[in-house]
Length: 265
Image 1 (cartoon, rainbow, N blue to C red):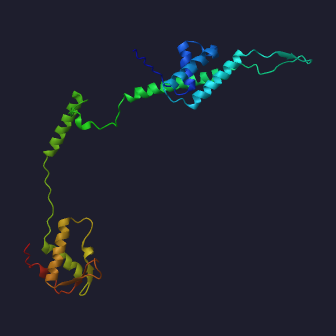
Image 2: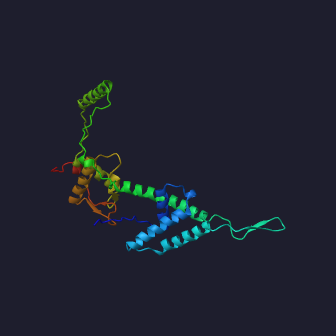
C-alpha cells in the first residue's frame, strides 16, 4: 500500500492564496483567468476539508466572490437598447468584474513585498549583538611620554643658560645687618613719652607702635610695658573687651633712674 503525503502551505488570507496560485501559474495579474483561478482555489479548499483543516469564513467569502465573478464572465452580455436620443444603455453594468479583485491583489502584493523586506531586515538585525560601550582605559598599556618631546637643541641650550644664571644668583651671599634695640632702651622711650603727660597721664599702647616697625621691635615694646607694670610704674587696663590697652603713669623719678635696671633677657 502506497502512502501519499499531502503538504499544504499556510496562507495569511484568501488574497495570499490567490497570489500563490497566480505565481504558480506564471501569469500576469492583469491577465488572470477567473475560471481557471476559481477552479484552483476551490480545489485547494477541498484539500483543506479532506485533511480536516479549519477553513475560515474569509476563505469561503472569497470562494463565493470568485464563483460570482465566474458566472458573470460566462453569461452573455445583455443586448443594447437604442433610444431616440441617440444614447445606448446596457441592461447591466458592463464594467469588468475582475478590476476590483486585480486592484486588491496588486495592493496586497505591495504590502507583502514590504513586509518581506522588513522581515529580512529583522533577521539581519537579529544576527547583530550589541552592548553598551565600556571604559577600557584601565586595560590600555601605559605609554610614558618623552619629557623633551617637541624640543630642539636650541631650546635645551636656552634652558641650560637660564639655569646657570639662576645658580649664579644663588651663590651670591648677602649679609643683612639690623639695628638691635634692647628692652632697657625701650623702657626709657616709653617712660619719656609718659612723663611728658605728667602723673596720671594716659597713653594708648597703639601710640607706641607704627607701620614701619619690625616684629622684634613690637615684641621689645611689649616687654618694656610688662617691665614697667612689674615695677608698678604704670597701670594698664582696657575699657572694653579687645579694646586698646590704656597705660596710666603712676611712677615718680626721671629717665636716668631706669638706666640701672637689670633685665634678664
